[in-house]
Length: 203
Image (tube, one colour):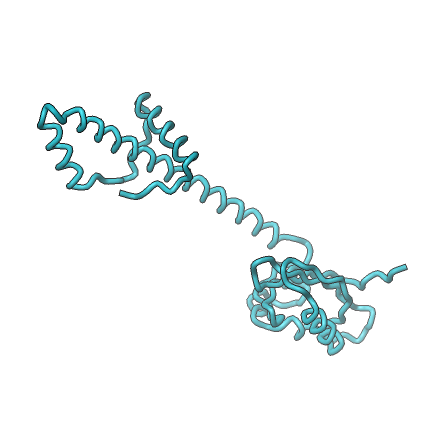
């Protein structure tokens, strides 16, 4: 039989809720938790003897409460999982449909994924962008700036100052992208944000 893994306080609340539902006759339908043959044999033996019949009833009650506890806990886990799935889908949609170009890079600067705005900025489908170094889309000067930025960026949730880089195959020096890179806590991934334009000079 599966084990309850709730904390002591949660376990007490879970048990109280299970007992209340049993007493009220509205316990949830069983999720398939089975009672072993050994437990059933013990119940039958205890119930067959008048002196231990009360023990059999108590044991049966404990098994019923434990089963309801498991059913309630399973329902809580499923609700939490559904909530997390919905939350992930929500933030995934915000990332994908954001009007700003987002790129997830590995520590070497290779693109692992990008959103639609990122693919549009690079003028390439997302599946063709994945695996390529972000510097491949920059001029020689831009690649140098990106390399310096990645080399000096500390880990642990830091964000770089914005810098201007020139896209590859551009003649006009006024055509630039403004990029910032952030490290992700407890991860090797980097988040690069790019927008059209240059960094405003400090007055």
